[in-house]
Image 1 (tube, rainbow, N blue to C red):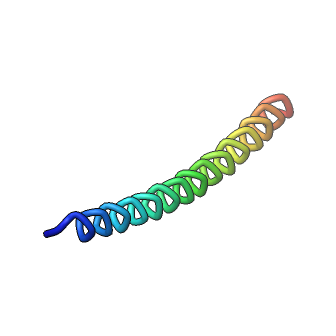
Image 2: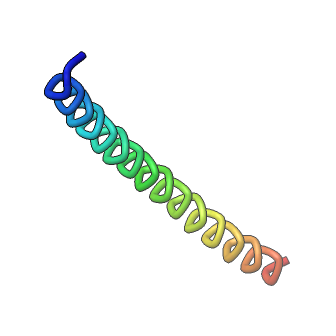
Image 3: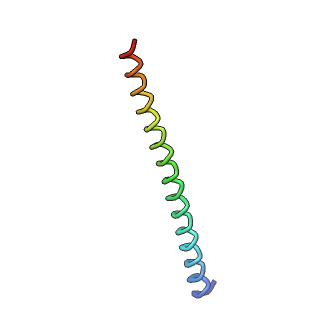
Length: 56
């Protein structure tokens, strides 16, 4: 391999890495959103449980 081909390969790998990082960040954001939704559901259910306990 000559220097030009190595430089091209390096740029290709850098581009692939950037795509992987972007995809990973997207998936992390999705998971954080799902966790936040579950946290809200837990809070709502805990409030309902406290209300139901008070009514008993």
